[in-house]
Image (cartoon, protein in one colour):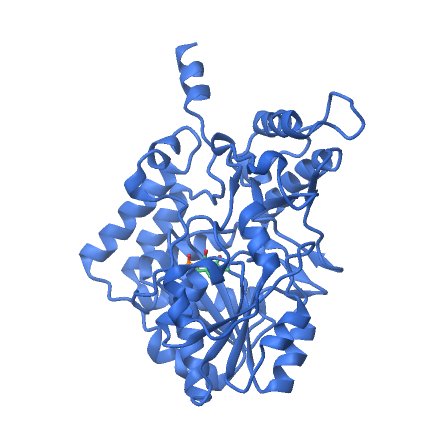
Amino acid sequence: MIASTFSTKFRMLPPSAAPLRPADILAGLKAMANPHEALDGLREAVQKKFGVRHAFFATSGRAGLSAGLRALRRLNPERDEVLLPAYTSFSVPSAVVNAGLKVSLYDLQADTLAPDMESLERAMGPRTLCVVACHLFGYPVDLTPIETLCRQHGAALLDDAAQAMGASIGGRMAGTMGDVGLFSLSRGKNMTAVDGGIVLTDRDDVAEGLVGMLAPESGDLATSLRHVTQSLILLAMLHPRAYWLPASLPFLNIGASVFAPEFTVSGLDAFRAGLTGSVLKRLDSLNAGRRNMAASLLAGLERLDGIRTIRPMPDADPVFLRLPVLPESGAWPGGQVPEKAALGVVRSYPLALQEITTLKPHLSASEACPVAAMLAKNLLTLPTHAYVRDDDVAALGSCLKDIFGRADGGAIWFTPRSPHMEKRA
Ligand SMILES: Cc1ncc(COP(=O)(O)O)c(C=O)c1O
């Protein structure tokens, strides 16, 4: 009784999570004994799974992004501007500035979160080195028209699938549609190695530049021990029974969005490469669980008044890293975003990129991007990960129902109907 009261009272869902297992950590430890073999094995597995010629591993997604941009700049030194969606992770402009480049912005479409093509076209110029396209929250964007636009302007395309590992559109995998592709392995992504990034390319000239930049991190014992400890802490702390603890410690800044362009760019160490190889085998099942959870939530949300979900693009197979929702009228009732941290219902990025004061010195004259500003104010995300239980889905339902009410006035909705495969495995 005391145990169950304790676990209900202290249960807190992280907004996003990809569980690690002890076997993943063991695979990491094993990899430390044979670093080259581990990295080569991982490279082969990634190349095969995503059908690409080259794969590189970085200490973080932003390090991978910075390396990809540096490799493109090396081939096109007279261009120094990178076009970003004005609503995305603050890590993206951090990587651009880290690579010594300028940021320029384009707006998004509110219904799909895909680029607003007119805004993107207006932002293109003779100094555009590259367009970064992001598949936000696991909703894949069709990059074909952006590819065409980039070719017309002599710019490169960077397919940032940090939030969409495993998603596809029209049979093309997110992360493989540009000159350079990116996945993130940080804590809140589709799969995690605590931290890390994967850079993909089919271009030999880009790969040549990446080789030198992403040499594996030195395997000194202190670094390896730190990584092992971090993975053990993550394994324990992401669990909803424990998550309230790190979430309540303000100095940990969990979930905070920070623009921080100073970081080192280097390759992944053997421990995290081994961890990645082990988790990669479960990526499809983790994503299948997210799709099931999203289906449950979407079925309930459909019946609510005043709230709307994001429309996947035609032929898209999203992986629902989180489930984003928006107020139908463009603003939440009473101007208050209905966050519910205990259930992992949180706003995502608090500002559009044009609103980050410390980024302003690095911004070229940019588009106004009003949709991005609206998204930053209003977009709320629901959790879809393997720790979300059926009773959480029901609790999410009653919480949102209290705020919005049912369109048809009835009482019962939000049937938890799709167990997370990963949870039961
Ligand atoms: C769209 C996008 N790109 C890049 C990154 C950078 O990844 P990392 O957190 O691994 O540095 C993130 C992380 O949040 C992201 O969401």
